[in-house]
Amino acid sequence: MGRQSVRENKNIYQLAREERGLTREKAAELMPGLSSARIEKIEYGVQEPAPYDIVQMADCYRRPDLCNYYCSHKCAIGERYVPEVEIGDLSAIILETIAGLNEIDSLTNRLIQIGCDGKITDDEIKDFALISFRLDAVSLAVDSLNLWVDKTAGEQKLNLELLKKEKARLKAGSL
Image (cartoon, rainbow, N blue to C red; front, top):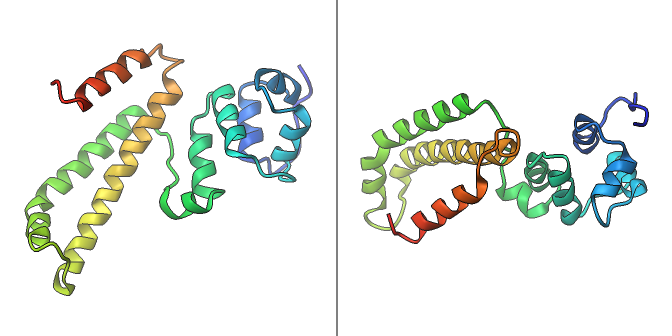
């Protein structure tokens, strides 16, 4: 294996590659269409990666959070609409999700009142902002859970195919 870089200020892509113990050359062998020179340019910030590059790196380095990072920091649309999601510990993610859902549960009746007339009036803004804020937190927790599943599936032998089939079944309404 090649030497470990001693450069300071490594970007997320270089850190992810090094965490997998890959040299740029080995990473390039595992990712069709990405040369070691292109990987170096991306890691040094000389060249911006394309979405396809990010997907390949995310898969190769087993870091699905690279996709979220790219979307939330490098994509003009994503910067506006995609929050950065951090992958945490499963139990912490679940507790955060449940806490958020409990908070939303107590606000459900107020949300119904606000939405009854199909508009949000000035006197409803404060309550709606709180509800929206709480929903954003739940959404972030769900995104974190999904990234956790993607990241740890291989490590913990999670049957992703079975999970996808079950979710598709539920989506189709055949509970």
